[in-house]
Amino acid sequence: MIRVFDMIACRCFSAIYQLYQISTGILKRAVTVMAVALMISAGATALTPQASASINLVEVRAEGLGPTQRDAILDGLKIAIGQINGIDISAQTISRLSTQVTDTDQYTEFASSSEFIEDIATATSGQVDSFEIISSRLRPDFDNYVEVILKVKVAKYTASKQLNRLRMSVIEPYLDNSIASDPEAIRFTRSLRRKLEDYLTQTRRFAMLDRQMLADTQNELNLIASGGMATAELARLGQRVGSDYLVILTVYQHGRVINDRQLLGTTTIKREVRDIAEVSVRIVDVATSQIKYAKSRMFQVNPAEAALDDHVSFHLGQFISNAINPARVVAINGSSLTIGQGGDTMQVASEYHLVLLGERLADPYTKESIGRKETTIGTVRIIDVQSKQSTAEIIALDMNISADAALLLRPIYADPFAEAADAAQKMDDAKAKIEDQKSNFFEE
Image 1: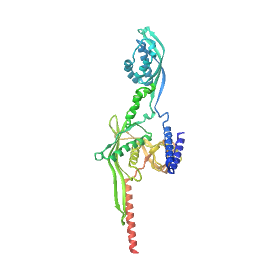
Image 2: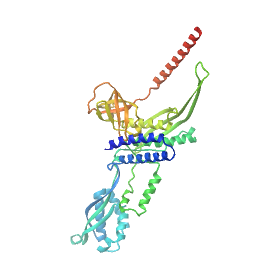
Image 3: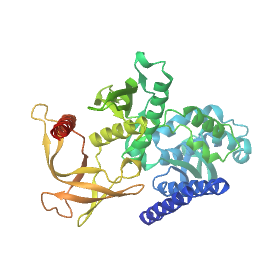
Image 4: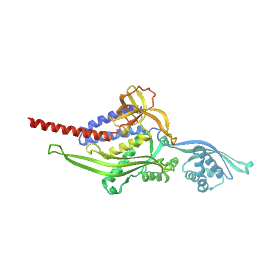
C-alpha cells in the first residue's frame, strides 16, 4: 500500500511542479501550499505504528505485604512495576515511594484519597496510572501484617523499533584554524552536518540521534514533568538513549578557486570556477574511543551545476553507508531490481556495480571476519526512486543470477588517473586540430 502511495505521490509532485512553473502570484503560493501538504502526508506514511514510540497502559494483578496498609500497597505497586518495566526500574522507585508517599491514615480510606494517588504518580514517574484494591486482610501468621491484592494499570513506554539499529550522532564539525573565522566556511559546516544527518537518516540503516535540538526537546520534557498532562505521559521521562558511534567531521580547506586561461590560438579567455573543500570523516565508538571508520578527501564542484554542501554530504553519506550497510537488492524481476534504499540517498540515472556475495572470509592474521567474498558481476542504473526503496535496471551482466541470490550495490567512483589521462588526450587532440588548421591555411 505504501509503495502505491509513493508512486501516486511522485506523480502528484511532478504535476504540481509543472503547474508551479507556469503559475504566478497568488496561484504560485497556492501551488506551494499544495506541495507542502503533500510532503506532510507522504512523510506520515513513513511513521508506521511499528516504527513509532508509544505509551500503553497494561493492567496487572499484584500482591503486597507490609506492617500497614500503606506499606502493603506500596509493596504491591513495586511488584506491579517490576512485572511490566523490569526489576531494575522497580528498584529505582523504592526510595521515592518510601519518602514521597505520605501516610495520612492507617485505614482503607486513605488509599483512595487524591493526595495519595498523586503522590504515587509522582514517585513512580507516571509508571502507575491508577490502581484498585481488590482485597485487604490481616495476616496473623505474618505478625499481623496487612496483605493486599491490587489491580494496577502500569504505563509502559515502548521505544521505537528503529532504536534497535546502530545508533549514531553527527556532532558539530571541526574547522581548521586557518578557516575557523571564515563566515562562509562556518555556514558550509553547519549545512554539511544537517544534510549528512538527512542522508544517513534516509538510508534507514541507522538510528540517528539529534544533538542539535537538545534544548527544545528538554523544554518539552520539562513541560510534561510540570504537570497538567495525563499521568501516563510521565513515562516519557528518562527515556533518552546514548549513541553507539559519533560521526566526527573536520573541514581543513574551504573556498572558491577561479582560473582564467587563454584558449590556444585565440584571444578568448575561459574562466573556470570551482568550489572546493577538504573534509575528513571519523566514526568513533563512544564506549572505547576506537576509530571504526576514517576517510579524507578533497571535493570540488562547479557552483553553476551543484551546491558544494549537497555534493560533499551525498558522497560522505555514501562512503559511510557503503562501508557499514551498503544498499541491498531485495527483489529481482527479470532485468529489474528492487533496492532496499531510497529517498535522497539514491539518484535517478546514477550507476552502480552489481556485486554477488559469496562465502564468509576471515583475516588470516587477526582471525576477525572481513565480510563475505564480493564478486562484481555487472552494472545497474537507477531508474526510479521512492521514499524507502528504488528500482534499478541491469545494463550489463557477466553471469546469470538466481532469484534468491545475495546481491548488493557498490558506487562507481571516478578514477582520477583515468580522468587526468582523458583530459590530457583531449588537450593533445585540440592541439593537433589547431596545427592541422594552420597547415591547411598556409597551404591554401
